[in-house]
Image 1 (cartoon, rainbow, N blue to C red):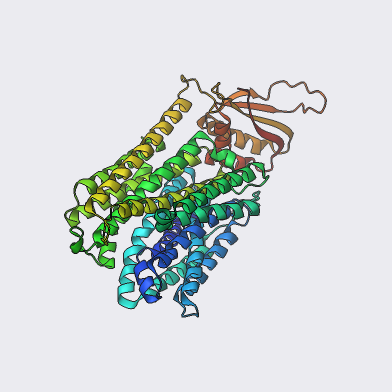
Image 2 (tube, rainbow, N blue to C red):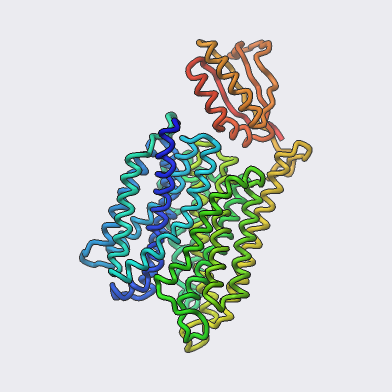
Length: 573
């Protein structure tokens, strides 16, 4: 992409990712205000947040699949139009106002699925080094967007009521739609995508149960048998969804790719780490708003409590900007592990020192720095083994996992605090917060170990002196091969330009040329023309080399200069 075109694209991608994250988080600081303004219970008001998370979790893989196809720009614009319409529903004084508010919040949550599409655009239209930094930044702003939206929404709610706070969402989403219309490019040619409707419906049902069970804490305490039954049903639906995806020709999520050890490990780290990160975020904000009469807490207003998130956003952004530079020296899995240690340090600070409001700011800043580094490193772990065309789909599944992890983190925090609330008391004992912090430390310890395991695996794959083993059979890892047979060569000059660029690209991708245009004896329907055979250490490495920016540049130089049969095959163990 030309440099002049890339300049407006990068801020547009970051701005859209920030807007959809901030708007989806608007429900968090407004739950109490919604309950009083619309005369509903706090449990019902909680659904203004839950329904946005649910619609986002369902829409993310669907949009990820659509974003992998030829109509990505139209998908982005249509999704933002839905978000704008939903924002209008949260503001307009309609009959049955709370019902329409929930509909509007569900439409706003759909925008969460655009984060993965923004990454796909960056990977397709920016140089490889530039795209890696932009993707990391998009991942970070999708997290810190909550920290941006929380205090602004709280301030507007105090000054002008709930409608004024939601009006902020209408303004910024309209700006995001205009930005996308002006700056979003078309997807590269040759893409195709089909949506697995059955898979989407089953996944939606399973996620609805998961998020419902995560949000309905009273169900677990009063109707344990019902809650356990619904949990079993959710697991069954998820298993059915996996079967549908494995058997389908156009799956919503490529489950086989998700089974790759690097991708599976990254998603496990995202799930457990998401539980821990959102747990600490919930603990700090709730502790800050607890009135002094409870024997602890600071009784901060919603707006002032929202300011506690400022260090979270600022240091998260700083970590996101630093991570691309650190990645040149430290592998992404090690960055995941290190960031999990930082978040664990935030838990330790909160557990040991929370008697002063400044200590909460420090703990929140440590959390933000850890979350920022974690979010910036996560795409690198997944995309290292993902073809460029599947960027949106692969990252969308990771964000579904993140949404579920965040929901469970919030629920676990609520359950621990509820268990620590004495009979007849309104607020939990101070020791309940310490217990929740210790649980969070355990979650981040698991996340750290997962990151270290991923780093060890990557080290063995890149070290030529370490024997590779198959993840399922335990035998040697099968190699990958490029097999290329030239039927006709119509433009030797284009072929020469291609060869000049392809050689370094193949070498950088770990390829070794075994056959290069030697003698060929063809039998049956064989082709006795120029034949190339290139070996890679694994099939995934061969695919990644084909999708690399350097080799894509070589293909652009080759253009229509030849007609060839090119395929990537997996060797025998």
